Length: 216
Image (cartoon, rainbow, N blue to C red; front, side, top):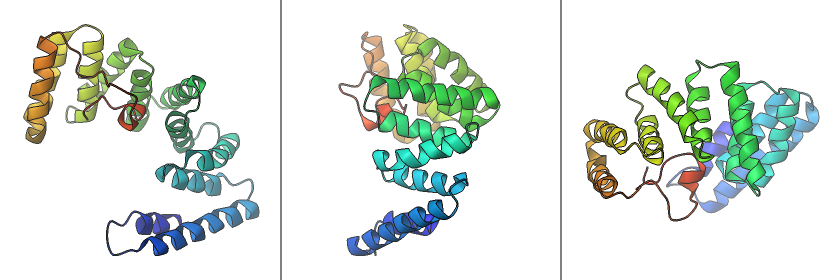
């Protein structure tokens, strides 16, 4: 039901809003029934929390994810989902700090797991721990040179750390690997050369909350 409802609700065409709402209600009812039937099985809570996370319903997702974390405080998928909720549904600065702590826990449990690496690096970047993010991003890119999102984030970290030459070199890597982004990259390079940090967003955005530098 979780998988089916997500596909129907996410359909771009051929599905009416009434049908989407019906699937949403069906899935919601199923989550309620499942968690009552198996109150000590984290899967029902994780599926429900992930479903509502994906729809941006952070406050609805949070109780499910909190319970999943109580049942399995070291499971990677639980840590990622709860951290995502803490960041995007944050009502206080402490929520973001809590999220980074969860991502650090996931990383320390499995430091070679790519998702744990990138998620923790994003958390460090969000909380302006640029030097720590830089070190981890360099590790990620060394292992996976084609990871353009991490390359872009490393360029942003370099710029925040007043290392413009390193930032420009990384931006050129992104431009050569993704020609469609070349015009934006050229603009960024020009701004850096003028002493302007192009990664500073004028306001907090969903992209920034997700840990991605402005413009990506």
